[in-house]
Image (cartoon, rainbow, N blue to C red):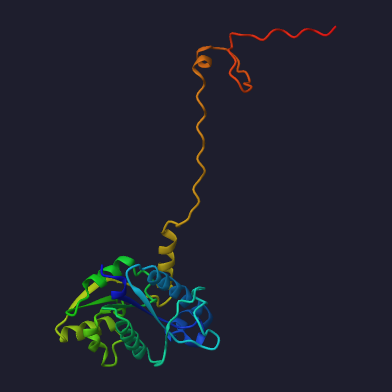
Length: 257
């Protein structure tokens, strides 16, 4: 893997407000619950990207008066690229351009709606991307959860329509028309309703907890001294500091006059 500055991960983040949540999530879960579901998905994706040691993180964030910063997601406030163009495809292009402007040689954008994305898949994407190869991760419904490229291939995003419908297929076709090789990361799914949400929650529950308390070890009983073990029927006696030879008995106490 190259130097950290050579790679960047792009994540689009919207504030936890009903009017900023996608209509698909609001239709599936209702407005209020959609905010919580989207927040959990963003937190999951943000932790993955933040803890990825071999890339910098670029966040495209549309701040509001209620949420002017990102302390609601991270108390350390990671900083962000403020959204100028509100259309999602413009945001994506701006984020990629910023990544390359800051010196990155490879950029990988991820979607928070696909929570099964793994660190190993990010490594696969970065390792595969060249001026002749783009990385694309497809969901089961044909949408795209990962897109990786070099600055040379920003032309794939110039024509509109690459983020709608079966975006993974659209981007793959564009790459092939430009005589590029497509590296596909493993297929996964995106959260679109109760069924996929339950699938994700069940997968989280089957994972072992990271900091589960371990039961205290039960100390083994101390073995009896050899001399005591060899004397059948002998009763135990208390010890007081120094060892006392069992063969030597103390003198009887003198009765009081």
